[in-house]
Structure formats: structure tokens, C-alpha cells
Length: 253
Image (cartoon, rainbow, N blue to C red; front, side):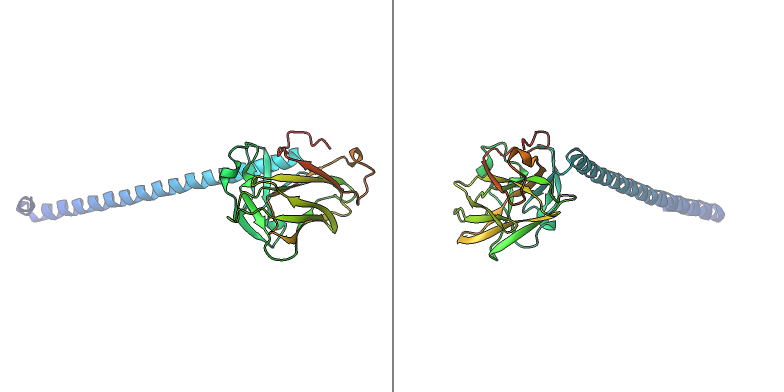
């Protein structure tokens, strides 16, 4: 092929050679342009999908809040907020409510036989340090209004010690109840309380019989007249093992 090129007259040879080089450069540039366009298109699709996920999460959160004013659901021990499709509840991480404690995962096999155990029981926050550790609950226009507070505890052998702790629970400075689980699964305690201010505290106290921990805190508006005269000092303990507490069902209080 090289001999054929060289057999051509010099002007024709250089013309065809330059034309071939120019064509190769054009093809090379077109190929680069094609790669750039495809790459940009892929990034555009990824950005659009990411924005869609973010908007969808924001919409889910907005709907969960708008449809259930006064509802606050806190997943203790989880890093990020999330929408639980199985319950229709938007759960907040507890990081904005407390700064002490440690996050741990529970063993899932302890909850396989109970469909009502959801994602919020997959983690706990434990408090190996300090006598009393408190969650700060801030609600808008909560002063003199009554709320139903649920504290959930699912041990799930999170510390790999196979030893269930016992500890006390306080609402502000008032003793609430002693948390004394009977198995590795869990239970919750409920209380009806009139907030004396827009801020209240739920505290876990170490009594020397194991490290306190908690799985979830959930707050719902309540009609205190069902239970009594509505005094902010009136604390009502409710033992329940039914773990359903969904927005779609009536709080019953």
C-alpha cells in the first residue's frame, strides 16, 4: 500500500495523504465528542434520579407530618431519618435529641416471629456512662397540652452478653417506671403527660443492674380528660405488648 501511495505524482500523493490524516483526526474528534456526550447524559440521568429520590423522601416526610400533626417518632440508635413504608411513619434519628450514648445493632433472629417488630427495633442506643441520660423533646405549642409518650425497648442481645438489664425511666424529674424486660424481644411503656412547657425530658437512669438502653420514642397528641383532671404532675403508666402505634389508627386516648 505504501508503494502505491509513493507511485502517485507528488502533489496528488501529499493531497491524499493530508486528506487521510484530516479524516482520521475528524473521526478521532467525533469519537471524543461522542464519549463526552454519553458521559454527560449518564450524569444527567444519575442527577435526575437522585433528585427524584430526594424529592420523594421530602414528599413522604411532608405528607407524614401534614397528615399527622403532633406526631413525633424517634428511632433510637439509627444514623439517618427514614420513611417506614410498612407503617407509614416518618422516623427521625435520635441524634438531634441526645448527644450521649452509643449506637448498636440488635440480632434480627430475636424478632423473626413477630411481624409487628419493624425497622425501629433493629437498633438501640445504650448508655454505659453516667447515672442519668436524657432525651430533650421539643414540641411546638406543647405547653399545657397533653401527649401520649411511648418508650420502646427491644434488647435483641445487642451487647452480645445475653444478659437483660434493668433500669429506671424518668419523665423530667418524676420517676416513671422501672424497665424490667422478661425476654430478648421487648416491650414498651406508655404515659399520658401534660407538658408544663414546650420542652420535656425523658431520662434513663442506671440503677446498677445493667446498662440502660432504648429502641424508640414516640409522641402523640392525647385527650387527657380520659384519664383524669389533666394535672401536669399526673403520670399514668400503661403496660402494653401490642407494638402497633401507626398514624392510621386511633390513639385511643
